[in-house]
Image (cartoon, rainbow, N blue to C red; front, side, top):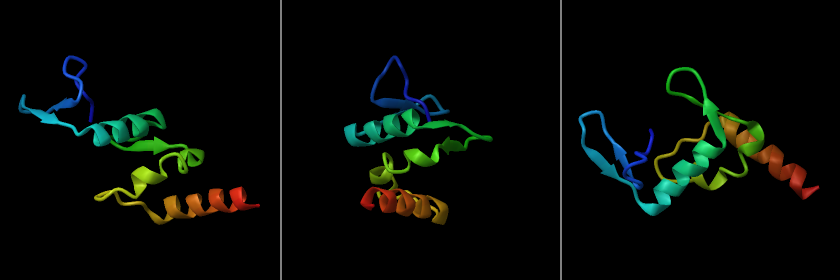
Length: 82
């Protein structure tokens, strides 16, 4: 999912239409892009230490955080409490 440089705040769809992004969602996508790398296919790889920075995004409606993600967050928080 890539924003169009000609039209910030919008994403161009395959059929030529544009999807308007809310300011909050656009910021979340920017955060995700900043902490991720391209993986296989359309997957994104996120460094385990970035989990805390993306914690708010993982709690957003429609976002599914897997068991490994939750376990990594718990580890980081436990270290922070020591």
